[in-house]
Amino acid sequence: MTTTAPGAVAASALTGIAVGSGSAAGPVARMAPMPALPEPRAVAAADAPAEAEAALSALRDTVADLELRAAKASGAAAEVLSAQSMMAADPVLADRVRDLVLGGRDGAHALHAAFGEFRAALEAAGGYFAERTADLDDLRDRSVARLLGLPVPGLPAPGHPFVLVAEDLAPADTALLDPGLVLALVTERGGPTSHTAILAKALGLPAVVGCGDTTALTDGRTVLVDAAAGTVQLDPAAEAVASAAAHERRRRERSARVRGAGRTADGHPVKLLANLGALHELSGAAAADSEGVGLFRTEFLYLDRTEAPGLDEQTSAYRQVFDAFAGRRVVVRTLDAGADKPLPFATSADEQNPALGVRGLRAAARDPELMETQLAAVAAAAAAGSADVWVMAPMVSVPAEAAGFAARVRAHGLPFAGAMVEVPAAALRAEAMAEVCDFLSIGTNDLAQYTFAADRTLGSLAGLLDPWQPALLELVRMTARAGERRGRPVGVCGEAAADPLLALVLVGLGVTSLSAAPACLPEVRATLAEHTLDDCRTLATVALTAENALAARAAVLARAG
Image (cartoon, rainbow, N blue to C red):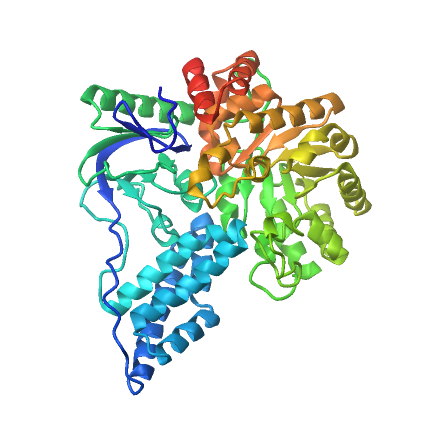
């Protein structure tokens, strides 16, 4: 097992950030790059209006195509595509394109320049905004290609199953991947929380992201992608391919055999819960073999509107979720506005660093009525059904914030109030947090970002955001032990919970529940069922004492078998 840095070539293999589990072998098919722009040409004043209309027509066609794709997609894919179409439909962007053409630029260069200006603004904003620059690049390329009459960038179609390789994958492409044709994903850029990683997990595709230089992965070359190890093996031997295929069959058969409540081989219970982010995901999540919802993201009710939803609208939406999970636990996260989810009625537009600004519980402190209305709606919906409703606040930093939130939750008659552990300060004071709360939930995505001061949009720093980082695992251990001492359950609802191998480590660290995309739960359940609690504790020690994330994963994989 190699532990070289992402992108390195060792023993004819590339390494990167592992996404999901499983493996697949097949021929490479690369995403075609966008053709280079033609030389700029002058546009006469008399021709400028027609030139501008042609450019705007191409932009409108891009929006229409994305809206059509969103209508065909579901879950996270539909959300990503809808958000991307709204970016392209921004009237400010259209006005800028028109101004540039009327100023003398041809349509293609006007589109390119206007998107470039928007891109620079997002990069300057940092955080989630900077992560959306890849989306803008894709919108630009699609619009320019339409204007020039060139093939629109998209997925290759070699006529047979293939391993898709790309510099990065745009939402419009990733959202409609056909798992029957695409065997695995490999990207040069991206990290463990990128949209490519999230959608790959939802589709159950093996993936390695942040892989660095992939020029060796030429069209038609056979590769073996091992998502558990985070490796891409070049020209694998027939024996290696056969062994991987046999292992994959056993993995799928094993996952299908184990059902019901999560537990280790010796019967230690580990609650397995589903993440839920929108009502259109509800039927699939409710049908999944889970013990409830460990992270119900409520932002979908607030996004893309100029004022907050009212009490009745919220109550109706929450009632649908609670009815679908009658008799099961539903952990509601209160509004996490700010940073990656700016809202005109809840966040300030002039924050220089939104990721460190007024977000989550801090936004509720600025406008207490937002939270009061939400808690009243949750309470009303809970009272009308039989779901076991728990409520937690995002971005809690100090115990006083947790205590204040818990008091507000209980004032609405809701019996279980919790705090998310997403910043190191909360982990360091976890025992004091557990003293005033009924439970804690660890959001590993944000906790990693804040622990390592690593912008998740920078591909060069993606390795620091790997949930296998020993320093991150140490914070998880501290939080879980604090919860144990206070008799409080501690869950993980970040991307880390979806990794079956890492699930063993998390349980060994003392985590009592795991919440992930529904498609990831069967393998997590099966993996836990094959290991005792003592096994998990041993693996946790192995991971904690490793030199880095890659070494931790490799050591645990070798030990777990």
